[in-house]
Image (cartoon, rainbow, N blue to C red):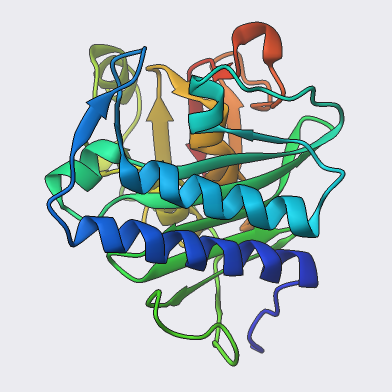
Length: 262
């Protein structure tokens, strides 16, 4: 099987994720400070430096496409969005960043007609880089100081449901009683934990079968991972079974509970 090739637009997003990751890892290696945002969630210099890099790059390459980004949104800066916009989480998994377990990611997604059509998820501390567009999803081991040129990608594909039961992946930092109640209704062979949007990517690449999430998430938390998973043949639905959609301004860009699956 030939190595997947990212489109020119996807290459732009991959390069921006790499640049953001270099900013993040520079802070990660330092004795950084932590502050609380208005919603009491933590933020660091890494979040802000990474977001500035990504916003500047998106403005340069896609000047007519609005961007909804986590830290700007926290400051009340939310552009008018239509049928085509970007969602950016410059550092998804800040709690993982603070605990230094490596399971934090850079998330960049493009939304068209309420659906994530392009997504990049990059975990620079573990050198795990994923992308999804159309019906192609891929991953590679990639360090922030390396070049994307000539990188060999491995295709991601969801796996068939094992007869022995499901491997379920759940949030490391946000496990709740509703998730446990849901898990009691399915045949679980193995339960694993992970942080940030890596959970979507584990399902996309066949390392897990199901990722349920019933606690609050924001659109920038999930869009890139959903793009990777759906490009790999999976799906993400809300608790009513409808596709998880984007651009929910009336909700403040937050998500209902959802189930991501192979």
